[in-house]
Image (cartoon, rainbow, N blue to C red; front, side, top):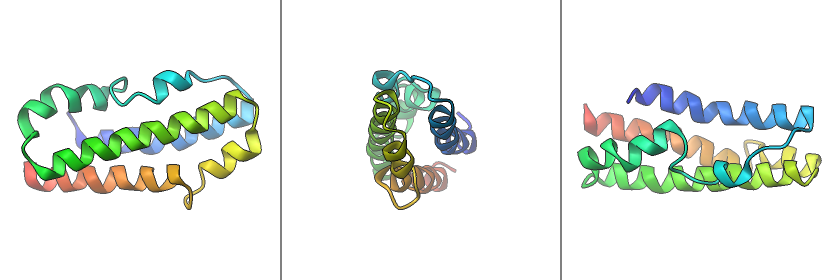
Amino acid sequence: MNLDNAILAHYEWKNKLKSAIASQSQLDAASISLDNKCEFGQWLHGTGASLYCKKPEFVALVQKHTVFHSEAGKVASQINAKHYAEASKMIEIASAFGAASVAIGVAVNALKRVAA
């Protein structure tokens, strides 16, 4: 697993959500909310867990990844409900989604340091 790519993929969610707001398109909020549907989540719950499950940095990362997908799913639900202004507020940096997005990058970098 390329952890740098995992960080980028999760930062890209803001763009995906912005695009869905702009185009007023529907998203699969239920799947987005699940932390084991993305490639990184599959790695976390599979190979990553077998390699690093005893590392506190890994445990923290799994928790932060779960929160990230939960927050992204909430935004997707607002988009699906056509609450575009609320969804836009929910992806700002000072939002729960914004904090979760930053936390993913920090947590992945912490794991990278102990995994090296």
